[in-house]
Length: 353
Image (cartoon, rainbow, N blue to C red; front, top):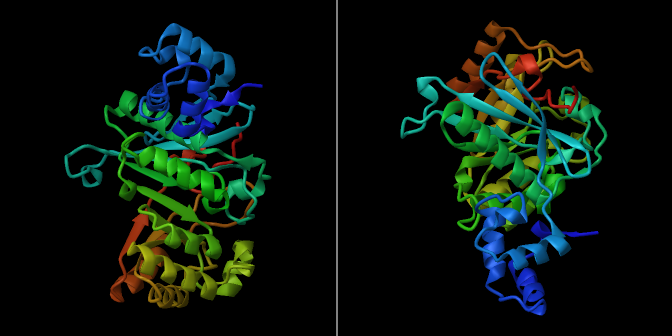
């Protein structure tokens, strides 16, 4: 079986090429084609001789993902079902924000890619469609990278604008695929890769305290978001079983450690479920939790799924909840759902037709 060339380092490839009688500098050229130019075949590597390309093709393969299906929402959101080399499917989403208020400083529209990190998920969050799937495997770094390349192409073709932001908020728990997620970020941000700023990238976690501390030790430059949804252990246990082994006190300590190491403010994601976590008392508990670490809060509209009976809170309750937090000086953003009509909104990705 041929080896996946994107799992080799430049040093490994250089050693192999020299053993084959090729010049070592070809390794750098190959890696530039793979990670900077996003080549999908050796035939595209036109500054290599035909004999070198044939040699590579005989021993290695590139395993690019393909778009199995593409759906377009009435609001302009595009959801893609990506087929991996082994036949598994994951989903990614292009979220264009076309209002003037959502433009970048240079006037370009904000284009966000939401990418997946696992096929399925081992966590069982009760409000998330992916949580009702089995976790089949982790994605490797190249498979995450390929989602970004494909969604960037969609943004340019459909909106004449490149990606401006990337969120690891698709299928899977990124911190349970730690090595590949960090490698993918490196490929996306490196000058030898796509060259995006790490400050344009947000990794979202359900709360794996040990790995949050590891992010601090690794001094990552990207943003971190915690999928919180309740600042009360009893309530959070009900909707996010991961909380039983990663309690709010444990998470608070880990987030404080992360902030101390990186200086990066945390984002708390909070879905307001009707008659569950949407009272002023819930807002008070959330405010107290935010005092543990510098943070901002994104209040997210709930997107119903067939497997669960949760409902979105009403507008008046949302305003009261957000108003309390703002009265305490907390930065609050209310995020409206995008792509709900094609099951592309937050919590709806499940790889289903």
